[in-house]
Image (cartoon, rainbow, N blue to C red; front, side, top):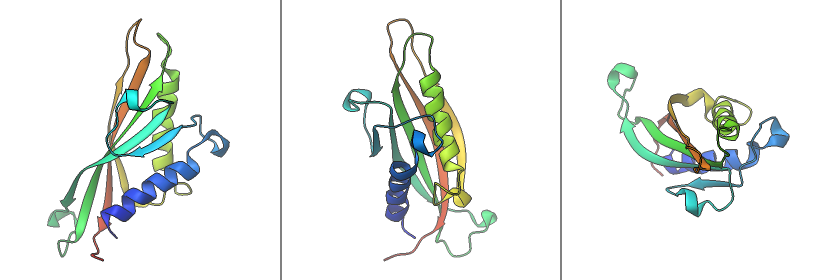
Length: 144
């Protein structure tokens, strides 16, 4: 398996499965691989993700030949909110976590660990909110 294969599948699985007609609360307008900012995401909610590192798994964790790797991914999302009503953001991050742990919707659930979550919300004049979620996908590298 290659990192490119995993990243492409994450995007496809999100686009195909994370929507309200599939028992989620959110309907993302865009799934973006790579770096984006709030203003580039014209319609929201948006889910984005990017590769932060691809590391060799330590032998203590079961690695045998240097091809066992950990793909570190930062998932993040943007949502419009109103003052003191951050429920749409909470729904979005809950849906992303639910998706990543759903073996029916996400191809790599059995190889995935969820990490830290951060939520950014604002005050009276700040109608934007976003989250980040650290994700690790364990895989065995193949070279095509």
